[in-house]
Image (cartoon, rainbow, N blue to C red):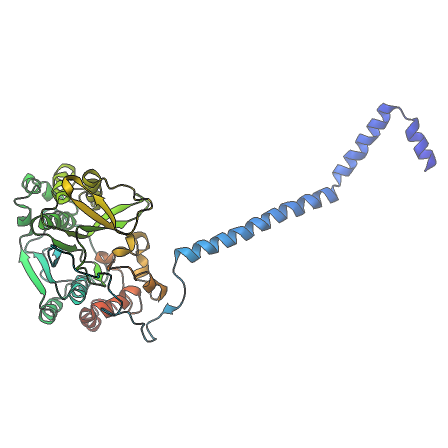
Amino acid sequence: MFRIKQTIFAMSASHRRFLWLKISESVRRIPIIPHLTSYIRRSSVFLFSLYLSFLFTGFVISISKPTGIVYQGRDKAPTFQPQLIGELCESQSVGAEKRIFFIESSGGKCLRPRQACAIESAARTNPDMNIYVHMALYPAPGSPEVEGGYGLNAHCQMMDILTKQFPNIKIVREDLTQHLLGTPLEALLQSGKLEKSKFSYQHLSDAVRIAMLHKSGGIYLDLDVITLRSLNCLRNTAGEVRSAEYKAGIENGVLIFDKGHGLLNHYMRLMTQIYDPSSREGIGPNGLLKAAGEFCGFGVCEGCDFGQLWICRDNWNITVLYTEAFYPIPFRNRIRFYEPTFPLSELDNLQTSYLVHVYGSGHGAQVSHSSLYGFLAQRFCPSVYTISSQSRVFNF
């Protein structure tokens, strides 16, 4: 050992440097400890990242889908009935027209179960109002959107039962296009553009509902809603929706307006300018959003208070209610209405809802009796539900 040390010290500086490089190179060829340390370090980072990923994924799942006790239709149903769930209206609005109306624009002679359910629920929860169902004598001009699915067959017996059971329900068969006369939309009708429509049922309904509100005022509801509570305190109101396309918008599925409201007149004039026969929502939600932006300054409603009041031109105003008021389950999550079972926490989400808009019902998703839609139908349109269950039209 002493001789080795002597030999190394006896070497020149250049030789010692060469020997050191050789020894270092040999160590790098068998880097057991450095590689082991690096492996442990990389593995620790990977495992920690994986742990955080699981935590985040679980958090996202927990907030994106309601959890808790599941309703399966076998147990005794919780108390969630008309008049028992509590009202949101504390008093009636002054000066508003006390009527609810629906529009059926296909020209069919009878109602589908889901349409009849919307009408019955409105009549049950608003016995102090007249419920008008305006049904087209003739098919809407243009070409209808192709529909298909469960629960779309018309059922005439439902109409007879509803009108006998609820004296406030009125069926009105008429030429719906006559409502456009004497309004700015008469020009659209006379132009022949509606005859080129690729969504004729939708376009005629979009136009007629605004013309009827302009002429008479009242409450318009789509035929795919279930009304949960009284609507008699609402006036000059629409509902807010949120989607990927816009942070805040206004839907036209629920509209409450006084006769002659300035926004309606502006909206009809805008319809005649922007009408596109191939755009399904051009004069519907998209047109209403544009009109409200121009006439009332409505825009992205970041941090809006519930019941946001918008001051419009010429001393008119409109209240845009929070999303849960009419659209508690958004379009992108509409499958939640039809899943075979549902968590009872869904009912908690409806505590501040006047009604629910069931997107997609016009295309007929199958309905289980233990689904959220089936649960609500059994309680808010039980007459329609019973008939549908017997005839299997509704597929409950």
